[in-house]
Length: 54
Image 1 (cartoon, rainbow, N blue to C red):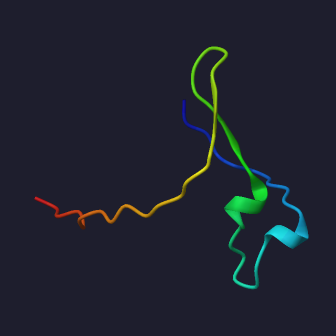
Image 2 (cartoon, rainbow, N blue to C red):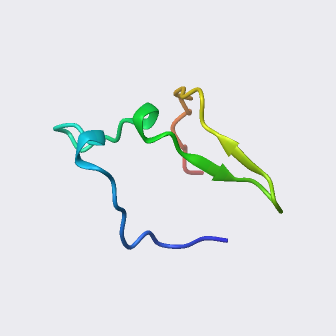
């Protein structure tokens, strides 16, 4: 399923001057499938190779 985010509400103390959200302060929960959910305990960056058009 794909969709467009139309609104987001975040407490002011969780947003810095560059409008980045403090993920550890937010403590998000993600829905997996059925009745399964997951906590976000660890955040990491995954560097992707640039797309090369053929």
